[in-house]
Length: 206
Image (tube, rainbow, N blue to C red; front, top):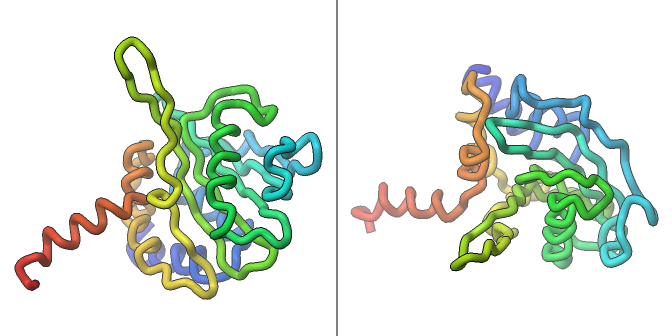
């Protein structure tokens, strides 16, 4: 994909109300040949799709496919919030829902390393694009599980949002012929890195 095509795709995906077909195309171009769309799970809702502790927040969810790179597994999800639930107000519940999914606690059984997620509210024209990753840190002889902070790994995009930063972070991955690693995907979401790079480049101007 050339520069012009990549810019058009990110604008098409992030500057409007969420559309599944747009998101699917973006993910397909981003993850390239190792994106396995045979791992689709149709929309799940109700008692069998959403466990009780999330039913006040999550209406349904679906999986578009699975991406494998080296030994890492990343699933691509769309999570539909319940009517009346704000993208802002229920962010902790949204992240915890995906964390339980990654652990295999929502009926999917297998463990996943991370997920790329579109959080969609029926009441809003904007939507949230998030990267949620399970991390492990050794403390003595014990392994402690940690979740990446939801705030740091999300972009709010859509009709009413200025999504220039989000768009710029994915251009190089879209233009590359190589399949992205988990670390490269994570870096695209890393706002802290963006801030540090900005001040490093422009600090002499202040």
